[in-house]
Image (tube, rainbow, N blue to C red; front, side):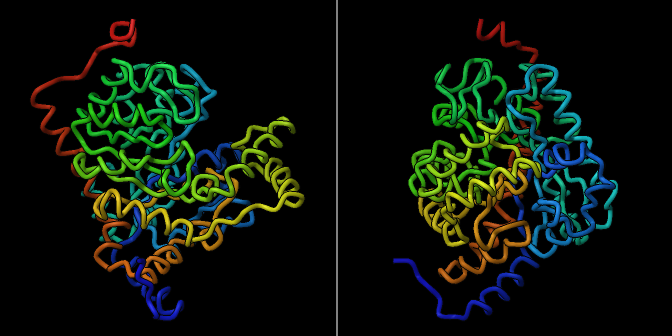
Length: 404
């Protein structure tokens, strides 16, 4: 039976803020770069994150990151999976560029982080470590040289797929095509291990998860996925995969997207997505025009509401199955139209920590959840890369050679 504390809600919230001051959140996934592309085509004067941007619909800005106790952020350098070829590569480069612009514009608050040591140094300086993760293997256009170039530019994880299959890996939300990873897909994982880029298994099919875990010599991550046993959505992680993280050393980072965490929200979101398409809009669009369509639909069809308690239910389960050393947080802010009550933007993390305190989570366990696990997994990937660099050089394999 879950232990529930009798301490007042206000006391839990105060304690949560104290904990986050010492062990801030490493958030695995934030789509602010794409939101800046969609809203203002990267015009950072029009979206100055030094000021509160809540009136613009953004979930993220520096004041709210500070209020939320965020100490490190993996900025997603995402491009939609209907982009292909060199168009996807170019758009990914533009996303990397805007992250670097943000860091350069706000040096007192943000520090570019390429290593676990950089993350710790940023924390010691009182700055937010800024890391990057590419979301979808379409971003490398089946080129291992492009993968290496993204790493050299600072990308420290790659999600193997987004919502659609790619030639070498199956996505969770597409019809299985290759049964997990192809031989070239396995080579991508090996090359990611060799250069120290984390293998991110959010968005991928269970077969792809299992193949990657079999092949990877370094810990993997799920940058923004929750527990399938709690909410049966294909974007979530099955229990057998969660259970394998202890042997691998990896981390599954719970996401806040309501349709992935609240069973009642799955059907509602499917209908809302169909409504978006009927209006000629992409279902992931979060521009002002798209959100007006969403809000009109919601007015006629009330939305099931997820809460911080919903997220905590996933974390309770993930801790039980994977172990407390193998869980983290990846909110997916600015990549979703809707958020849970109490977690409406990046200032909300103390509410989640307060709920976990109410449930009896210890300070030591919470420190692992928020900071220590994510730093450890990046450091482990760096260690593996140093070791592999002594035994093999860059792979020049092509998809044509390996998959025919």
